[in-house]
Length: 309
Ligand SMILES: [Fe+2]
Image (cartoon, rainbow, N blue to C red):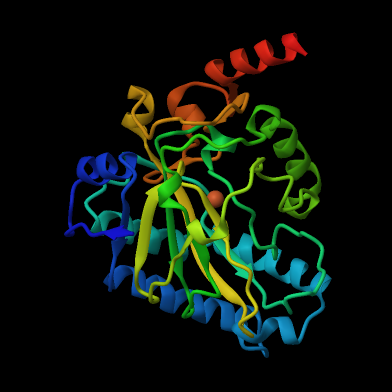
C-alpha cells in the first residue's frame, strides 16, 4: 500500500505523488522520533498517575472525554510541539512559509469490549468511514498520521486505496460545515459528536477492502485527504494514541491543483482551519477570502437536486 520517498525530497515531488493517490511512508524519521518522545513525556505527565495506554481502565467515559479534550487543546497549543512538527516538515524538504497546517491533533481511541455501548464523543469514538474532502472540499489537502505508542492491525485506522477513483454514495451534499463550526465554537468540540462532524457513506463497502495501517512509532505516513479511511474498532486492551494533522501547499491551493474530486458535493470549502506554518497566519487571511466559503461546483449541484425534489 505504501510507497517511499527519499528525504529530503521537494514539496513538488511529494505533493504530485500525493495528488496521484500514493500513500507515502517515511520510516525511522529522526525528527518524528523526537516528536514521539516529547509527546510520550507530555502524556505521561498529563495523565499521571495512570499509564497513557491504560487510561480507559481508570476513568469513566465522561472523565475520559474531559481529560482527552484538555490534552488535545494543550497539545495543539504547545509551541514545543509546533516547533517539532515544523522540524519534521522541513526535514522532508518543505519550506514553512509555503505550507499551511490544520490543528495538530492527538487522537485517543480507548479499548472497548466488542459489545460495549459508549456515546459517540468526538474525543473517544472510532471514526466512521469517510474521505476528508467530503467535508472540506479541499482537494490539495494532505493528511499526516503517526502512532505515538505501538499500534497493531487491531488498534489503528484503515485506508481504502482501492476506492481512490470509485465514486461512492455519501451525504456530503447535505453536510453543513458552517453550522458545525458555529456549534463547536460556541459549545466546545464535544458539542459535536463524532458522527455529526463528518459526512457519511450511504452504501455498503466490504470492510475487508480496508488495509490497516500498521507502522512503528518514529514512522509517518502522508496521503491525500481524498483517500477513503476509517477507524478500526479497538478491543486490544490498550488505548490507541496517535498524532495527525492536515496540510495544504498554499501555491497549489491557489493554482487549483490537487486530487481528483470523484464524489464530493459539500456546499462549503473551509480554508480558515489552516494556518501558515512560518507565522501562524490564517490561510483565509493569506488568500484574502472568507474562513469558510461557498463551494461553487457542489452548491450548484445541490441546488439542482433540491429544485428537483
Ligand atoms: Fe479523516
